[in-house]
Amino acid sequence: MSDAEAAERFVDLVAPHLDEAFALAKWLTGNRADAEDVVQDACVRALGALSGGAVEKPRPWLLAITRNAAHTFLKRNRSRTVVASDDLEALESASLAEAGERPASPEEALIAAADSQAVEQAIRDLPSAYREVIVMRDINGLSYREISEAIEAPIGTVMSRLARGRAALIDKLGRRR
Amino acid sequence: MSDLERDDPRLLINAAIDGELDAAGAIGVERRLAEDPNLAKEHARLIAVQKALRGLPRERAPEALRARILAMAAPAPAQRAGVVAFRPRRRLAQLTALAASLALGVVIGAGGLSVLSLRDGAEVAEKAVVADYVRSRISGRPIDLASNDRHNVKPWLAGKVAVPTVVADLSAEGFILAGGRVDVVDNQPVATLVYQRREHMIDLTQTPARGEAASDPRREMVDGYALSRWTEAGRRFIAISDLPASELDVFVAAFRRAAAVEREDQPSATP
Image (cartoon, rainbow over all chains, first blue to last red; front, side, top):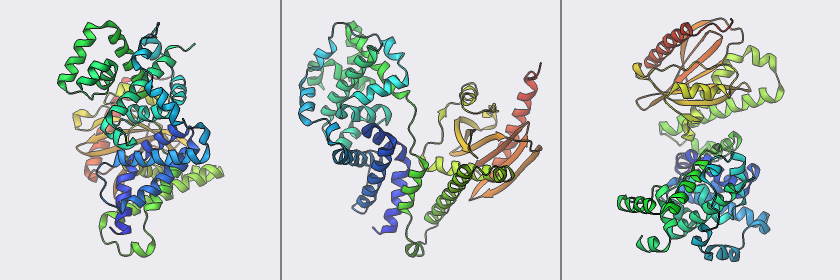
C-alpha cells in the first residue's frame, strides 16, 4: 500500500473512533493533557501499522493501540502508579463469591443516586486492569470479544475482571456518605 | 458456559446485563433470578452501576488534537499531485476548510475582536456551521442528545444555550427529528437540531439575531453542501445538509411554517 493510500484509509479508520480513544486514554491516564499525548502517540502507531495490512475491526484495533500507548506512557512517566502484577494476581485470586456475600449489601437506590462526580471518582479508584475493561464495556460499548482482542486476554479474563470491577464500584458507590 | 454457571452465577448475571448471553443462557439467568432473591438484588445493583456509568458525560477529543491527527494523514504536496481520485481531494478540501474555520474561531476568540465579529458575525456563523457539520460527520457522532421527541430536545437545549430553541416536529413532512447538539459559534454556545431524511442529515443551527432584520431564506452551496439561512423572530437560522438543494428548500419551508404555528400558539411573553 502506498503512503497516500495508507493516509486515506487512516482517516476512514481512525477519525470515527477518536472520541472513544480519547475517552479511554483519559480514564487510563487520569487527565486530558496526558490523554492527548497518548492518543497522538497511538495515532502515529496506527498510521505506521496501516501499511502492514488490512484492519478488519477498526474500533477494537484503535482502542488496543491506544491502550498500549497509555501503558507505555504510564510506565515511562509514573511507574509507581501502575498496579504491580503481583497485586493484580492477589486481586484475581480473591473469591468473587466472598465479595458478594458481604454482610450488608448496599441498596440499588443508593447506587442509582450517585452523582457523576462520585461515579468518576469510583472509576478512578479502581485498579487499572479493572478500570480499562469497565471503560471499554460501559463507556466505549465494546463487546466481550472486542475487549478480549483489545487487551489480548481470554474472554474468561474479561468476564472476571468486569465482574470484580463492578463489584468494587457497587461497594464504593453504595457506601458513600 | 456450564463451568461458569456452576462456579459463579455472578459472571453470568454480568454477561446477562451486557447482552452477551444467547437465548438459552438468558432464560437460565431469568430462572435463577426468580429463584434467588439475593442474586436478583445483585442483578439490580449491577444494572444501577451500569446505568450510572452510561450516564456519564461523553468525552470528546479536543478539536486541536483532532486537527493535529487528521493533519498527519494529509499527504505531502508532492504526493497530492499524484492523487487522481475525487474523494480524497474533496475530503482534503473539507478538512482544509474545517481547519481554516477553526483557526478563524481561535483568532477571534483570542483577540477579542468584537468589532470584527459583529460585522462579520453572519459569515463567521456560516463557517462555523459548515465546520461543525463536517466535523460531526467525520466523528460519526452528530448528536449530543438523541431523541425524536421535541419535548425532550427543547428542555435539554434550554439548559445549555441562552436563547430558547425553536423545535418543530416535521415527521409528517418526512423530516425526522434525530436529536440536538450544542455547537460553539463566535464563542457562544448555540443550539443545533439534527433532522434526518432517508440517509441524509440536516443540521439546523439557531443563533441570536443581534438586531439583524428579518430576511427570507437565501440558499447557496458551500463546500458541496446546500446551505440556507434566514432571520426571523429574533433568531438567525442556518440549515445545512448533504440533501439536494431543492429538498433543503422543502425542509426550510416546512420548518418555518411549523415555527410560525408554534409562535401563534404560545402566549405572549410579556403579561
